Length: 101
Image 1 (spheres, rainbow, N blue to C red):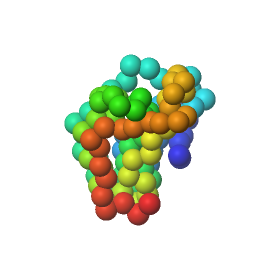
Image 2: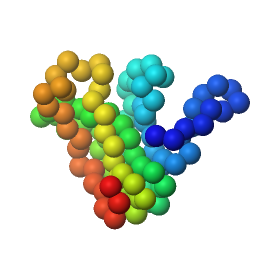
Image 3: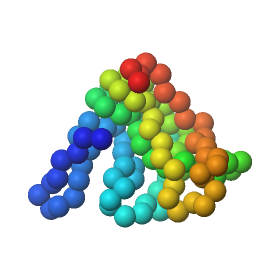
């Protein structure tokens, strides 16, 4: 993930559409829900975020569409606060198309 440091010491992803919890060195992310979005034309990745437990329908990443990305469509990460996601993790009703990776 390309990132730049801002004047106030935080980071921003300049080549990502919606990047949630994409910097693992920034601490844990919790209670963040990304749903009903459309991302198009991002330069590196359309969307990042955490997965949820298998068998649940969750709005952590829910009903999102990513398209026309010069790179990855949706790049999901396991939730580090979950003990079960090493064996099974899901994302609900999100899709990507016209992505190069």
